[in-house]
Amino acid sequence: MTTKRALRSNFPRGSYLWSVRNAQWRALGIAEEDCEKPKIAVVNSSSELASCYSHLDRVARVAKDAIHAAGGVPFEIRTAAPSDFITAPARVAPTCWRRATSSPTTSKSRSKARSSTACCA
Image (cartoon, rainbow, N blue to C red; front, top):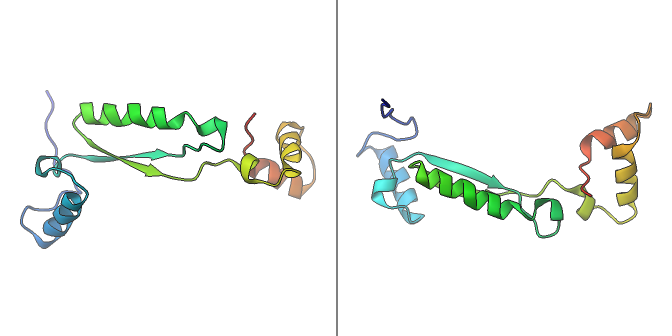
């Protein structure tokens, strides 16, 4: 048996905060009956520039469908793909790959670069 718990994000109906929030949801095209449902963000870093992340639009679609099926309201939030490999200058890419796959080094700058660089092959 499940009990329906009140969501902290839902303000008392008729209050000032409720009317502002309700106006925002309605302006986004959310139906009145969906305003009381949980809103769940799906963060998508899909990018057509990096093959590592090009499939994420399909994954986000499946996640949003599952949220709908469970009774929630999904919102897709787009964010930058964490790929320095494509956006870095061409001469940096081989160095990036070499640093990511090499053994640890004593140089602080190389160690810092290795820990903050994401490479896709």
